[in-house]
Image 1 (tube, one colour):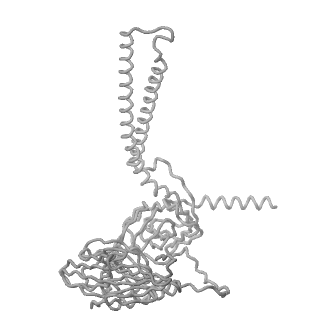
Image 2 (cartoon, helix red, strand yellow):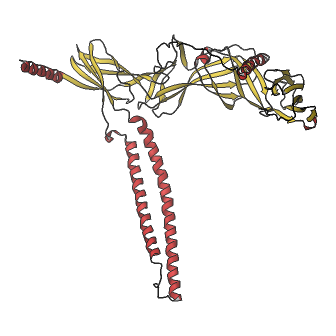
Image 3 (cartoon, rainbow, N blue to C red):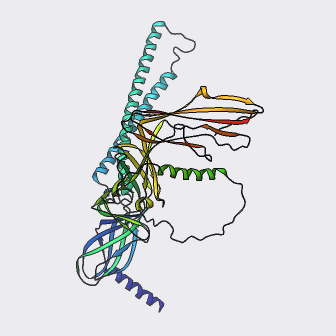
Amino acid sequence: MKKVIFILFALSFGLNLKSQTQKLVSSKIVFVDVFRNQAQVKRSASVTLEAGNYALIFDKISNKMLTNTAEIIAPEGVEVLSISSKRQYKSDEELPKEIADLQDSLQQVKDLLQGLRLEREGIQVQKDLLMANKNIGGTNQGVKADELEDILGVFQRKFAEFKTEFFRIEKQEKYLKQISQNLQKQINEYTSGKQGLSNQIWVQVKVNRDLVNANFTLQYLVNSVSWQPMYDIRVKDVQSPIQFVLKAGITQNTGEIWDQVKMRLSSNDPQTGNIKPELNTQFINFREPVLYKQNRKAKSAYRSADMEAMPMVAAEADMDGVGAIQEQQMLNLSFEIQGLVYVATDNKLQQVELNQFKLPAVYGFAAVPKLSDDVFVTAKVQNNDLISQLSGNASIYLNGVFTGKIYLYAQSTDSLLLTLGKDRRLQAKRELVKNLNSKTFFGSNKKELQTYELVITNTSKETIQLMVEDQIPVSTQSELEVKLISSDKAEHNPETGKLTWNISLEPKQIKKLRFSFELIYPKEKFININ
C-alpha cells in the first residue's frame, strides 16, 4: 500500500513539474534605496503570460544580494507560490567583444614576453660557454701574440654583442610589461563588478487568467554599497554668511550598473543593532585627583568667552534645497534625489549634490605665535538639523581658494567653531628678548626672568580685529613659584596660564606686544617647562 502511495505521489509531482513553464524575465533597475552600508534595489519587469503555472527566472542579479531578502510584487490575477535564488556561473562567451579583445591582446603580450625570456636564456648560454673556454692554448702550451690579439678581439666583439642584446631585451621587456599592466587594469576594472552577476531569482507563480504586459516589481538588499555625507564650506568674505553645500559620496561594487535610476539616500544603517541597551551596575571608588581635567574645563569655558567677543555678521539662514527632497523621519533622515542618477560598479567615489544652505557666522582672526607664524580665520556658526545629524569631511574654500579640510562632527551643541584657513596678509612672530632676561640668586633661591615680544603685522588694506594667544607656565610644585610681571594688558587665566589679547590692527600696521614672567625656585634644582 505504501509503495502505491509513493508512486502516485511521484507521478503527481512529475505532472506538476511538467505542467510548469520556465520563463526568463528581463528586468531593469528603476529605483535604489541607499543606506549607509547597504542598498535596496528595485527592478521592474513586464511580461505576457497565459493562464497556468510558471517559474519566472530573473537573471543577472548581483552576487552581493543578501540571502532571503528578495521580495516580489505581482499584478492582480497572479499568485506567488515561492521565491528563491540560485547561482548560475557565466561562460567566457558572455564577455563583451571589447573585453575579449583585451584578453586576446594580453595573451599576445605574454607570448612576446615569454619569447624575450627564451632569447635572454639563449644569449646567457652563449656567454657562459665563452667564459668556460677562456683558458686559451691549454695549461702547458702558450699562444702566439698575433693569435692572442685575434682571440681577444673575438672576446671583445662577442661581449659587446651580448651587452647590446641584453639591453635591447630589457628595454623591450619594460615596454611590454607596461602594456601588460595597462591591459590587465582595464580587464580588472570590468571584472571587479561584472563577475557578481551570476545570481538568479526564481519566482514560482500561478496565473489565473491570460495577462498582457503583466508588471512585476522585484526588490532585494545588497552589500558592497555605501554613502557618506560630504560638505563644501564656501566663504566669500568676512562680511557674508557661510555657504554650505551638502553632497553624498556614493560607492558601489555590486556588479550591477545603476544606469538612469531614481535614488533615495537614507541615514539609516540596517546593520546596526536595534536592541535597546541595558544598564549594568555602576560602581564607584576613590581615586587621586587629576589636574588636567580641571584645566580642560577652564579652557572650554574660556574659548566660549573668546568667541562671544567677536563681531556678529547679520545674515538670515537660507535653507533652500538644491538637488534632493529632504525628509525628516522618526528614525532617520532621507534625501530623494531629483532626476535620474548613474552610478558605475567600480567602487569609486561618485558625488551627488543634496542641499545648499547658508548660515550666519561670527568671524574672527586668531594667532598663536608660540606655535605658528600664521594667522587663522575662524568662524562660529549656529548648528542646524543637517550638521547635527550628518558627520562628514568638509572642504573649505576661502575667497574661492581651497584652504584645506576639516571634519564636521554630528553633535547637539548650539554652535560650531570652524577654522577656515590662513590669512597670508597677516603675520605673527614670537621672539625672546634676550637683553631683558636675567638670572639672580638670593639666599637659597634662584630668580629667573623671561621676556617675550610678539610682533603682529597687517599688510592688508583693512582694519583687522585679532585675538592673540600665548602663555606662561603653571607650577605644579609648591617650591616653584611663577609670577606674571607684565602682560601688556592681556587677559590672564591663572589656572591655564593663558594670555589673551584682543587687538585692532589698522591697515599696514605693525603692533608689538610684550610679556614677562618670573620663576622662583631653589637654586640647587633645575626646571622643566612642558
